[in-house]
Length: 144
Image 1: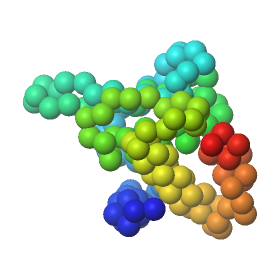
Image 2 (image 1 turned 45 degrees about the horizontal axis):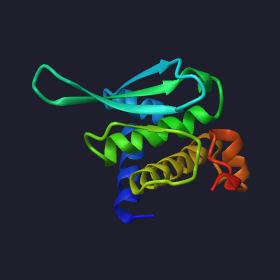
Image 3 (image 1 turned 90 degrees about the vertical axis):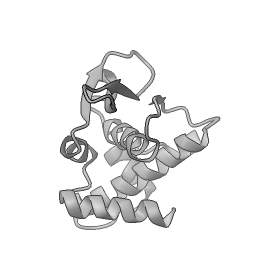
């Protein structure tokens, strides 16, 4: 993990008093919307023009993951794109093959953020990786 990413995530947790990606997005005024994408993608990041001439990010999540643990990993992944890859429009899917550098970076952001969120929620570290899969929809190791 890059030290600067770890510092950014620790700062966000301190500033917003949580590592919950949905609450962080809300506090950053990032609009989150649920869409019926079908089977794919799990999430998408879009940027829309603002009145001032800039661009505002919007995270779109697949309606099919709304009530599943996967919503956390998809949300954290897309939040990673917004914070680390300014202006990038893209989507998150659970297919782990042929991952680009920016997708790996967004996965790393999501994993670190949600590992901290687990400690926040349960006051302990996860016992193993599988617990993170069950709790927050981390990709299964067999998917890599």
